[in-house]
Length: 114
Length: 112
Image 1 (tube, rainbow over the protein chains, first blue to last red):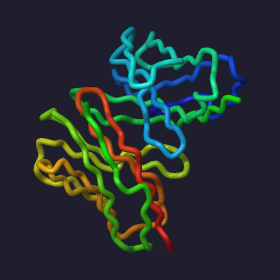
Image 2: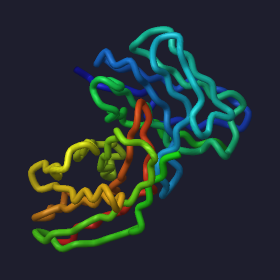
Image 3: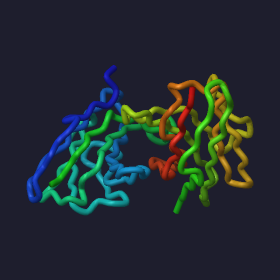
Image 4: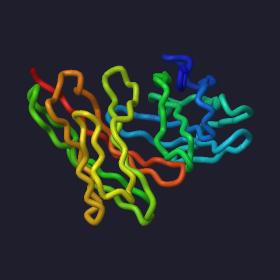
């Protein structure tokens, strides 16, 4: 199993550009998450999904959009990139309630907006 | 709302010695989990250890063990026989339902 994979690993965007961060998991997990980690800080939840077709906002959703058309994929869309979105983005997945809430993380995407 | 506090921004330890990282949390839930994650310079988040709140016995995983004090809402991580590869940021997290709340992290440096 590859676990949770994310692409790209690095990206530089200009202010106002858009992009999609890709996330795929092969563990058949129902729950998927997007976090951002600013330098020297912990993780903040952007959006999460409890299953295909169901998404909900986390702590810092402004400036982002998500969709969940399949169990495996959970892309994060940045519209009109701003310098404040410079961060490292992590995707994660978990079994959910029955299997315990521990989350398994992808390797992260380092995004710089200039 | 759940909160997690890690009061030690940075710590260092000599190789082969023992170090304890502190974590306190606040929750009104009864059935919750607690976790320690390790983030080495590669940035990959690695689950180190988990503790179910309903279990009184402290969890252990090889050189890693926790001291879970439920009444005090304290969940510290002890690393025995520290190795250079333990150098990383360590995050404490509490989980209820389908979400985790993370602390701000403690940078641990293991010195040779």
